[in-house]
Length: 327
Image (cartoon, rainbow, N blue to C red; front, side, top):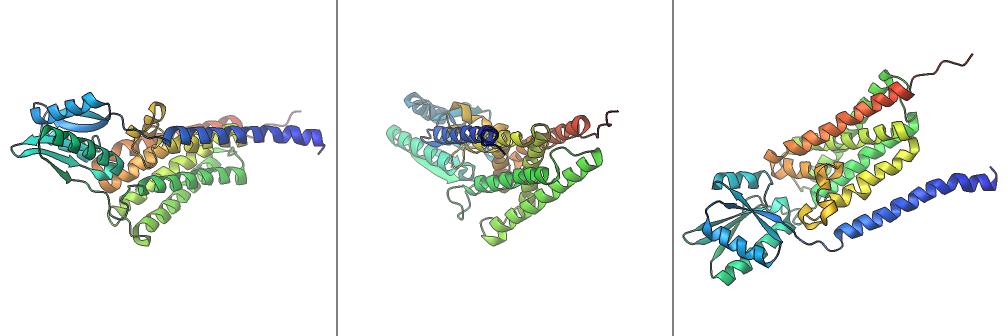
């Protein structure tokens, strides 16, 4: 290959790699370099003057905490069980009680406890703290759901890319598309099984809900694998850049990492609600600690799977049919 042609061929991929690297640095440093809590939700019951007054006093000092009002204590506790709030503040005859769910995010509950403890001391009101959903002692910072999700996403999309490189980015017919979809399902299940065994019997981090964890991990890895296969079916190798952009550059910091979404700057706060890594971390955390909250991220990941299969089928129909020779 002539030198000039080699330079022209290599310049494009290197430029894309440069852009991804710069975006990776900007996204991770920009999102995580100085996490500050904003509008961390705390439940209070409507008409609970002691709790509402303390939250109003805290809010007047800054936007760190946000009071979410419920009609009764049962509704507030239900929201705590569904990971809709991080804590519930309530007044009583002996002072205030703060019920937290540290499994939802130890960083968030530490901030809530610290701010409300200081505020209660200033108001001269005793504050009792109870952890209703404690994080597992083997994972005191609550990072395992995030890192497990990262591993499943990376392993999943590498499976989709590897199969595309080995067999071609576009299946030639519907039967081959079905085989590819099935092979990626098997890959996702094996990857999830390995992850479940590592965090379960292997390291002894979690001992409960392991079958649900296996199912959640399979769904997450499958969504990442199908998305990679779908993107490459239309964009071929250049699609790898889009996969990395959405699943790594934006997806990982957008999921919050070791920080709750309320600690991230504006653009990244909502990414976890639709991007695969964030949904995966939410789903894994839910099946272990908040089973009532698992449905929403599971449905969204299933939509990613279904949409990716449709895109892959469309590519097969449009690009995979053998063309008749020109006569």
